[in-house]
Length: 288
Length: 98
Image (cartoon, rainbow over all chains, first blue to last red):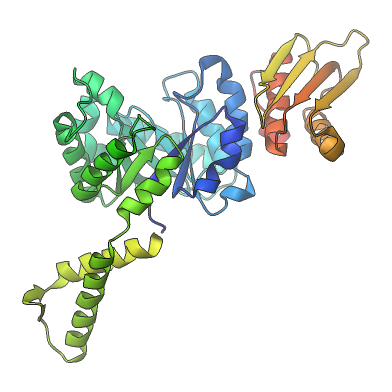
């Protein structure tokens, strides 16, 4: 599986962006049929996204469709277009409980059968945008074997919490970020941090990326193509981290060949968690 | 399928197209295409429009396309959206749309 650091929103009613988003090489593109599309353009955007999914330029990029909620008049129609268009994943917005994932899963099962796709092929991502969603994060994350990620959506969540973005270290998001991460790690799926809305503020974006990276998020939802490169660069290991990881793995390999269980490097013990961390650094360097 | 009411889909933004459909008084299917790249891609654009209309089994209506350099997939989608709106068709037949 490829790394999932960047999930780039692409408005579903914008052919110029649907045609070119691949150029920025995000790990995932998310064709948006929800908030980016006005009510009167939902039908036309649905057809655009259906056809855009088969563009050869997206062959090597994970393609996700953000559908409208299933209790709206658009949700099921969006889902059918996405499944028939062979989207790799469905992102469900405003997920508050595992029941919503169960309902989504049953529709995906049916549609995959109807259009001849292997059952289970379509993956699911839940966006969590409320206090209820955060509290239920673990049951949402484990609601289906199709689940590959949960994503925190900051704007609606903070409205629900009766607060707003403060910038800086963002204490208002700390609990939700930590709760989502624990749910994702316990469920062995990916976790995406909130989108950063001010596309002209690279400094603020990178500050937030560092928080997300340090907490352990796999990546972020992105709303502008220029954020893709900034994010990937920030997530790439530094030369120093890379050199250290190589030394750790070489030392572990030497210990293994010599039949030693434990080895030290520069006075520090190299044990399995340290080896796993070094392997992760090399993996991140590889995808960068 | 028959166009029974006027409808529009798309925009005049770059890489998009605007498709206007109206009922045809003579009971015929008439298609007009205008494009900034008509000299280079006129035949291809026309082929995509004709194929799309044919799959939808559109037998009557006037279809006017104002292309702004759209790729084939966008032409398909916008023509389909305009026709479905103009025919008042809610139920989608995905075989016809693929």
